[in-house]
Image (cartoon, rainbow, N blue to C red):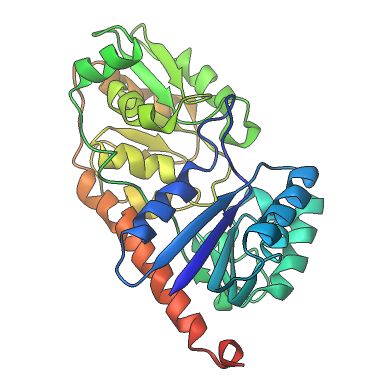
Length: 314
């Protein structure tokens, strides 16, 4: 089977982290037997979308893929420049929030045989949600694993013993609610440092996670919830709001909290981890449910089902 992934989340110097979850899925798919997978990334924005379509048409003018799978709603338009037996689209959340982008995404879905979302909650925002495949990108368990905390801190220049919390996103992304973390910080007892992932290269993220006493995911919405899985994979305590897959991922895991943001409750949970020299939880086994390998296998099976459908045989 030959497949092409198309993403409008290519990284740049200011945002090296952008689209890293798509590249992780690409790497996991490449490792599966019987697949020949390519990745094409272009930058976000209307002009980049048109330029991406032209580049795709030029590169694959004489090629027909079994599957062309776009990530993020607007990428489906540039992906139309390539011939395919089956077209797939995974939405990721922000493509369904902005009114104009949401409208364009829903129009693009008319040209797609395989519609996907990373969580059931996000699938419910699409037409005919029962027909939407649940396909997420998953956590790379090779990269995200427990690392010795002092060494992780040394690599990223953090004080070896000063407590710190991690906000695992770019603070400028309003829906991630860095304002909540700043408010919570004022209620935490021990002096501490706030780390964040704005402008952090993907290769350094595991050190940031392992450096933290606790990861704080205060988002008002999540299409999936990869940051929680990355913390679990590193056995690092995590507090999260009940959005995306957070309730399922954190249910019954001691040392974690999944609850609506409330200063007193979150501060009590976070202070316990800030007071510990090297707080750890048993989270890795739970993260394995959403490993990038398992999620890539699910994507490949969804492709096979779509290719076996009558529409793909015409």
